[in-house]
Image 1 (cartoon, rainbow, N blue to C red):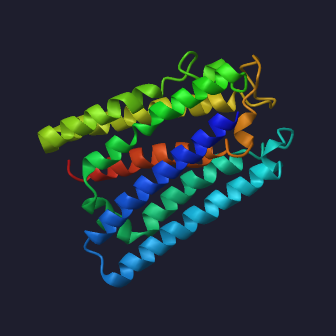
Image 2: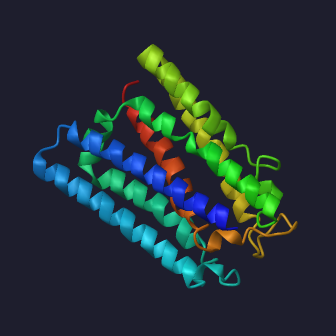
Length: 236
């Protein structure tokens, strides 16, 4: 159990470090002035830190583990990042300039972290703390995105803009697989909506640091798809 917890700390730390490096590169090479760069950077890091501390506190206090509440308290982890992403995109004029400065293939390479996530889920299943449908031995095929992401990124580096339609299609493919596992996860919660009755239920993601899976890693996955689509769609 200790090993898998350490893995969450390491993977989340690595992903956030790489995102920070990419963001700083995009800000530095964007058309934003000094004031706009500082405002954008500070806003992003403040929101990120507050979010991580919030979901960690909710998990540590056991607040998220109440599945008898309706709606389940766990939705507080799933939906705010999605809503925040849309609001941030609509209201932030600086985001467009930053995305324009970030190489297209970077966001594709980053999705390779999902291979590690799937291996972690499989290990959790072996430990008896995660249901099989959440793994690649069950109904979770998200590992395909992690495997193909670097391939699509490499091809884009070699062929350039001619790969844009393929990149767009791949992003929709990735979002579809992500949606699949999110539905499976929700239907595996110990709630009246539960469909998968095999044990254990999907209770683990309400605990710390496992709450970082939906709260950080899943959020990174769909955000990178969204930003990649914005990068490529504007060039069609």
